[in-house]
Length: 263
Image (cartoon, rainbow, N blue to C red; front, side, top):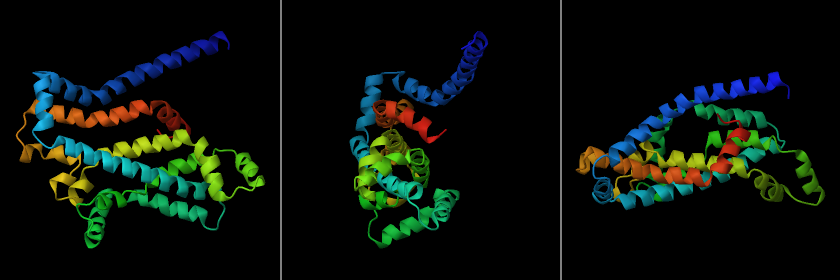
């Protein structure tokens, strides 16, 4: 590397920091305000009140079950669909992809009423299967994994086929192991998206025991008496599981973001 190239790289690095730092502060400001408000006065009593004034443990458990089920389901359905669209050759493959992508143009709120009518007809209102079954397919997840699967060398598949492996074996034993960063990335995004889901759980549940934490916190003002700092403490407790999941999967998540092209 020449001196000019080294200086240009240093300038680019400082420019990236100069632009990225204000954006990071701006993104973290609401979270920092929430935490500071929660711990400003009598932090222990505030968090205890937030956890005991309402059935917070039940809300957390419901959110955890829903988020894990939806994340696992989306990873599986997205991986199988993406493998077919990226690695298998069949007539109309690009048209099928176009139909999938066209679903992204439909706002989620537009589908809330048909989805509710469906689970109501099946008797799945206030049931985990009603909340989970409508969230098992992610068009965004299919597209991201398709883009990643297309970067995997076909030599790996050809070698497996020479040894007599069938498509299902190639999918499980060859494609999925080398796609771990992308799969973890999708799992983290699906978990976080479901954890903060509000509209659909609000529509599809009536019993308090089936309410996830986002809906439960929204009920604070109407059903429970809790101070402003107490509400911030409840929101802080609700965010912690998502932060923990990201910290655990950070290495795979960052690598998956860069390799899938997600920005």
